[in-house]
Image (cartoon, rainbow, N blue to C red; front, top):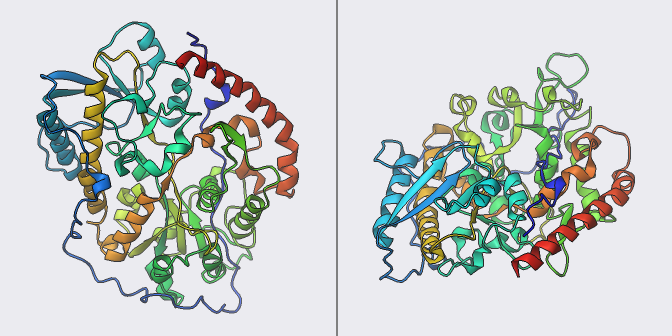
Length: 494
């Protein structure tokens, strides 16, 4: 068995980046986009949580009713900032739901669930030690991809009771996460990072009202919330408030971001044009070279969010890449962010109300919205487990329960804040979460572009096609070498 780290460039997280702020400075008022929905002032609070819809059959597990594992221990290791299991009742809704999930699974299957927390355990070292207490690893994305190629995990499809076609396994992303015919890593529903880290847009309703604009809820519902629809707002909120002749954080802009480095990646994902895809054998391959649509998206992002005439992100550094203060003080109309940031103090203490919208589609012909998620936790099962049937049953039951109970609790917790009480925001939050996208090829790109990541190209006066051509030879050589290692792993798995 081979245990040398096979893909060196998987070690770094993809942090190609981008920015989100356009407009002009002062001058005559621009005609606002046509009103597509209820006015920005229509924000009557909803006092009751949304009604729970009947369970979708695709979200209910089909485990046999007579499964009984005689009190067997199931122990997972979680490399997370918070526990997945909760051992006692708690007043906090998410902790209480985690407790109920643990109790439900233990009673359903007659098992004892346990969890070890921390960040120090190395999965490969633990495996080689011969210990078998820990049966499953919940690991951060970039480490998961590296360790999945060490031939120490079972292909998830080999677990008897796991049904990966179910919604709670994020079944729409299965092919993207597979390496060839093997699925070592799964995106689960019981760990909330993939939900909290899902990209979206906030729209400041006070800023919208000040500029006579409406929230495009109807466009979203009708599938017409597109790049062009967002671009229609381009200069509507840009004003040089301090009169220095340029846009700065002291001014008002149409667009801002929690981290501009992520904006272009969100828009590439939303347009369904990743830098890498899969070939006919479901192995990673490049799709960026010579891709006209990808170039169009890059040019769109640069002109919208990185131009000195339309953005405060005029330097390739972090100082200009967080504009939270502008947004919470009503000096920004749109803010590119993630669902989980609703719980951050800056947004909780905001006086103004804001709407939640998905990142727009490329055009109306695109079938659905796609919402990028980053920094997620994947689950993998050691191939030396003593009872793989028990492990599969636990994972199936836990994911089904979490999808039907923990995720709604997360949404309703976010919506308890006054500025997220509009039921249309509930629908848009669910839309973002239901269209989450995570892709193994995201984690194969960073080393290829070396010290010239995508977000820095936004500040360089060089055509994107020329930049891509300059890195193509190195990129293809790096990928070819790594695919040799992946094929070796396939031979070992058998």
